[in-house]
Picture 1 (tube, rainbow, N blue to C red):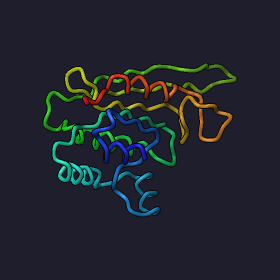
Picture 2: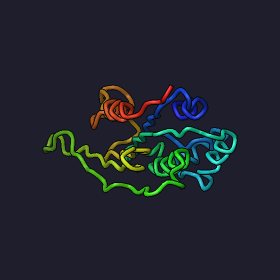
Picture 3: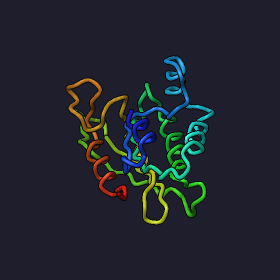
Picture 4: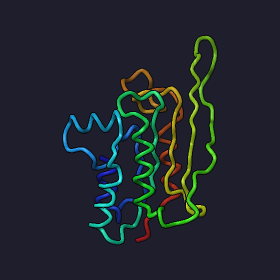
Length: 177
C-alpha cells in the first residue's frame, strides 16, 4: 500500500519505505501475487515504464527497501527487482555515475549458546552524487517479520530496528513545495 500511495501521489511523498514488499504492478490476482512473491517477475519494469509514460515529469521517489534473507513468503528476489523498479522511477538509467557502494555489514544482538543467531544486516546504497536514491537492506536470518519489533508478537523479530532505519532515510529527503 505504501508504494501505491507514493507512486500515485509523488508530489506529496518525499520518499517511501517498504519492508518485505512484493513488486509493484505485476500481478492482478491472488494466485499471481503469490507467484510474484515467490519468484519475482520477468516483467518487473513494465509497470514502471507505463507509469512514467502516463506521468511525464515524474519527480522520482527515493526508497528504502528492507527484507529478510530467510523470508519464505516474500522472497528476497522481490527486493532486488524492486530496487530496479525504483532506480527506473528515479531516472537513474540516464544518470551517471550510478553504482552500488560497497556493502556495509553491521552486527546486532547477542551471540552465545543461548542466543546463537546473529542479526546482521547488509546495506547497499544506490546513489547519484551524494544523494541516495535507493537503499537496500538485507537482514540475515530474518523471516517474514518486522525487524526490531517485539518478538513475542506474531510477525515481529529481534534485529536491527526497521522503523529507525526508515526514519533516518526519510530525514534525508524532502519535497520542495
